Length: 182
Image 1 (tube, rainbow, N blue to C red):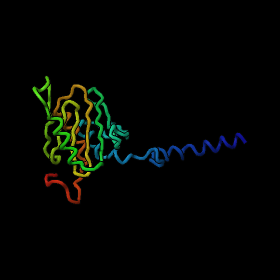
Image 2 (cartoon, helix red, strand yellow):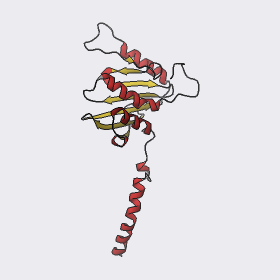
Image 3 (cartoon, helix red, strand yellow):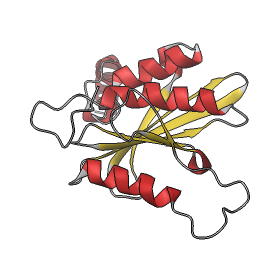
Image 4 (cartoon, rainbow, N blue to C red):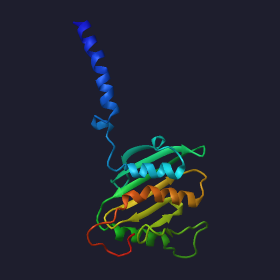
């Protein structure tokens, strides 16, 4: 009987490998929050092959789904985490985040950097220098891209966050709070 089970296991091993390699199991399926277009955009921006950009789904501190895209380029590990918050009033929450980050009572502290508006991503899309985050909305979701790229210049970080965030900002088909969406 032992010899028989041994043959069955060896016969089924190639089938299991085929299913695993083709995404035949739910464990191998790409999470919806980890958009292929974002992975490809990150690869293109960094000048690496899309296959060298890994992705991993997780849940952010806000309880919303997020995807971390990571690779090695320019001799460093580079990661951008995209958090997709589908909570209510995305536009209001974005403008409030920008407003609160610019509020200073008294003289600004040393090194203070207010949010910087990023054109072409919709109204109030802003880069938050202290946290290396880009926030933008299409009035349906509030998307945050957080960049981890040691010693990179600001413009390179903003560019990477921008290309990672764009696939998530599909223009809504219904009414929106403003006409400023791209």
